[in-house]
Length: 285
Image (cartoon, rainbow, N blue to C red; front, side, top):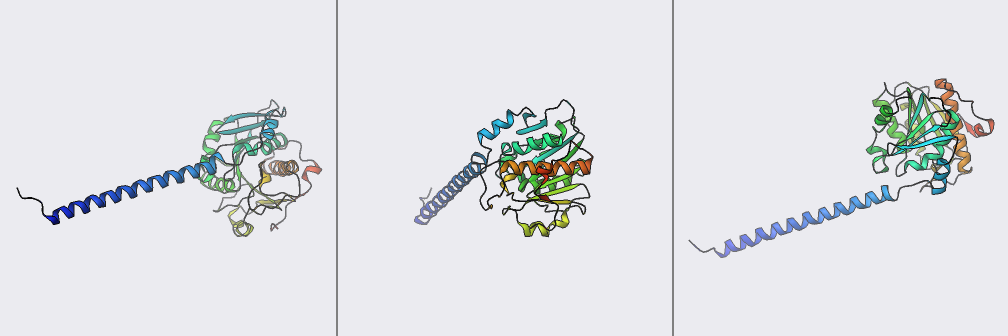
């Protein structure tokens, strides 16, 4: 048996060094990936936008609506004993938790006499849960007609769901959002706040052809992007010129009128005060 040469020893050391470097690099990559995942989870999950506690509690205590927790979020219905046959699945905006839309859902459920479901999105990003409406439609057996919609990113993903499930969706509702792909002919409503500076208006205009030709576009004067829900504002948004409660009333009135006209689902109509400040103008300004 011959002894290893100096060259053999050097080759062995080089190989061990290369393996050591590779192991250290792999460990560093794993640590960075874990750290990145934790930061992502914290930003979009732990530090997501929520409704203030007092706002959430006021909705839960409201005798005009019933609120149950389901689908990781909430099901809100009018408190009358009648069975509601029309439902709205509403996808939250990016980094916004379902409870931020409780006041909006309550206003709409009471005004339009519909069931409103605001489900939880994975990591509070609808792009990871575009098919979330499947479970809602399957689970709410009393509802026979469904409008799928959402706010901001949630609206874009609702468009995709409507496009992929034309037999399950009867209408589309967008709030501060646009469709990034064509949608077949169905009743559609897009609601924009005149003070919404988060929505890319140029992109909205460019993608207008993706909406059904007969889609309705409504503007609510003075409403900004975050007033689609109830959370503490959003970076890049403009200051609102109406109060959040007023914005919710006007939004519910606009949607209720649309549901009445398109689905013959009328529940008393909107008051002139609530309807004031909304106009079906195109293009949005």
